[in-house]
Amino acid sequence: MTKFIVVVGGVISGVGKGVATASIGRIMQDYGFSVTAIKIDPYINCDAGTMRPTEHGEVWVTDDGGETDQDLGTYERFLGISIPKSNNITTGQVYKEVIEKERRGTYLGHTVQFIPHITDEIKNRILTASNGFDIALVEIGGTVGDYENTAFLFALRALENTIGKDNICYILVTYLPIPSHIEEMKTKPTQLSVKLLRENGIQPDLILCRGKQALDDIRKNKIEQYANVKSDYIISMPDVTGRDTVNTTYIIPISLQEEGIGDKINNLLHLSPKKTSKLEEWKQAVHNIINPKDEVNIAMIGKYFDIGTFKLADSYISVNEALKHACSKHSLRLNLHWIDSKQLEQKNFNIKESFKDIDGVVIPGGFGGSGVEGKINAIRFCRENNIPFLGLCYGLQLAVIEFSRNVCSLTTANTSEIDPETLYPVIDILPEQKAIESKGGTMRLGAYLALLKEDSRVFKLYGIDKVYERHRHRYEVNPDFHEILQKHGMIFSGMSPDGKLVEFIELPDHKFFIATQSHPEFKSSLLKPAALFDGFIKACKE
Image (cartoon, rainbow, N blue to C red; front, side):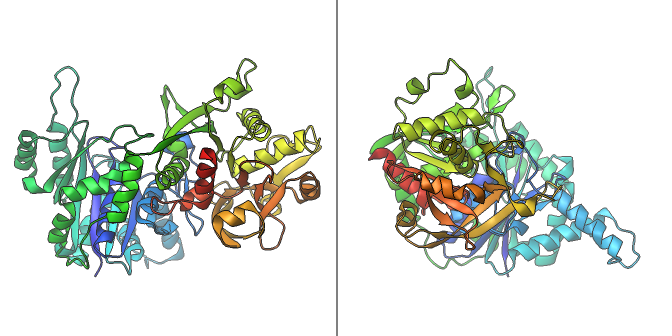
């Protein structure tokens, strides 16, 4: 029978449940167990596909075409597995399915109610997603006090009744603030989180205490008294510093295992490990991050940064992490420079001065016309000054536009997404997309096969001639312009099997100028960096 590890959050959202869940999964994998992870999101959206990146962070694309919460990306990067879209359960999905079943007459005339119909739908989705695995991690989004989480907490109680308490354990990830005016770590918010969890019929078995500093014995004993959790099962999980530089969340599995969390979970779930967990390969990768031999300066040219007066790096989290994975392999410190593409459109912006210490440039995915000319300016500068360039999805499309304008002399070339009346629509909407009006789940989504040109640099990086990468787009390189682009020196190094869609491009006489219509960052993990990112970082240091 599958064992369940349920992770819930207290006090604040964004407390680190996703990293904690992934880290625990990594540890349990190292014991020899097969592991999957399920993310429950209480929002009414059916999926994350129509949300702005600054609203909810990056949209994660699964192999089977799901547009899901970015936490599934965290799970995949830590666990090194492909997780299907069914492992992201939302309130919208649940209610939509229950209503459709009612319309079909599935409930045979019964009054459809919150309990049992909604809670049973949630429970059954969890059981289906976990089928065939030794361990299923279930993360509940938000916090225990959120109204919208009520249905999911009820469903977990129902799950416990179905499978028995010996097969499920609950972990509360909480936050202990240190108010600046008193400089003392406070446990009261954690006490209240435990109280709220109990009011929903759930007693935490283990508590992970987040905070700026490590938890001391005085605070630990206080939590033990109020939470009725043994002090050995209250674990400190302090902040790691320098999120985008030296220290890293990838150290969390190591830190948690040093606290004995693996053995504690094995005791709670009566598990017999298949091997000893040492995390040796993981430790070596983390060592390379924390103790780099050199450094590399990468410019990220994007536009999804601002959320009020704050910057939201989560908009491009998978690209950031893929760069870190490649840097770990080469024992390099990643210095990531965020550049708002709209700044590059200003007349007084000195791109030469801004890029003087930059080793390479990444243009990530995106939509719409905002900041596009700034990105095109950056691409041209990279092409003309032999600066390593990696374009992802929209990055490929803009690289084609820049090349068309400045090399092929199609001076007004553009994408029909921005300029429907352009004389040179070198980027155009996919034919099958033209009649589609609905926005949710209708793009070219999921993993698609590309055939690589054998004498290309892309082929050499992958080492194979057939690759599957994940996609999320409506527009492609217009076949009407394939001939002129190739005539002027652009290499189509990867194509769809029917030869109609350009999946990879490169410039042969450049230090590194590669772009892909796909999102290879979605398949990168700490122990297996994505091939294009690996090659890009290597070129940046040559």
